[in-house]
Image (tube, rainbow, N blue to C red; front, side, top):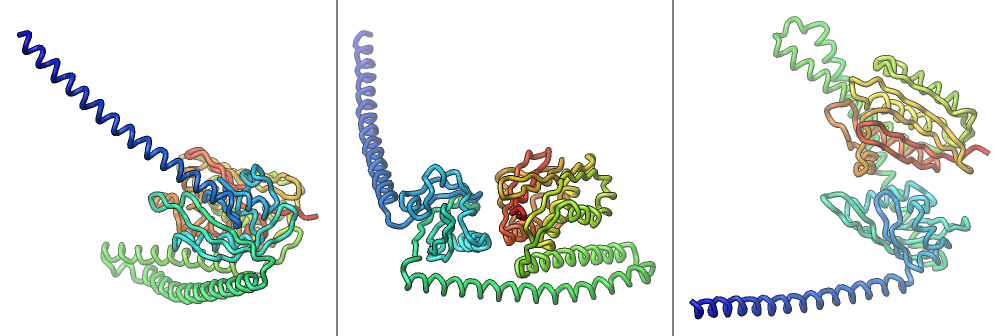
Length: 394
């Protein structure tokens, strides 16, 4: 019995010794890995900081996460100031940022993308941006890029100008093609819808129940497709139209917008309150009306059927800008979906609510073309607030 115990104890001691040796090997490997990782991070940080080109890391919502010293030197901001900025506000032309993001979402990276960036002192630098995107589950979660200042290099300035012209020409050709196709498509849809409506009014009694059901679906599908094409044409018009900024009084413009939406407001028995005082913004009246019509229409529409829509529009002066807020008590939106909501054809509540997914793309395009920005805050299930921030009229 004693010898058996000795054998067992010996086996346990041997097992513990073996486990100890294995643990020591794992700890040694872990220390090597940790040291290699630390060395890699040190090398990355050294290259990051000592690069002659500006380097930045940002999120899709525009928040800057990190910058190097060259970025600070290029734009004249301190590092804390840059980390508190929305990277999109640095672009002289906001539409260029849209094109940049669209290209990087499509291809995963861009090389020598031309852009003009504003400095803290109000100057503008001609730059070429090379950047890549980090994706998670198919969505962009981070941008990482380098910015080369070409303002003092005639050859690079010429390259930037040429690439900008080529980019503009390609975009104009694409938009013209899109407009032409959409216009022709709508012509055929109107014709189809007209014949389907005549057939429904004058000959439906000659059809059996299944035939009438098919015809009703054709009429409904044609109506929805026509609405989709109309929104597509509106988005193209907003992006292509000439901007004519003037002093626009918000109160009368919003009264016109509310009157235009009166049928939808009455249908939902919605309560819409306007409190914009005497604020005046520098904007294109047509584009601003288009943006506000879409925001108020959504505010009335995206509210659960058992809840009375309550929409409030307010305005306040913030320095040299005016903030117009449209808030509602609707379904809201998840924070992770905010950026997606502004993409054309993205629908956050498909099936439950009618729509084409183009409205917010129109809003953003219109506001950014007027030199403003759109901000969003939401509590899912309780409501959402869109803020349109535009220059105040002097």
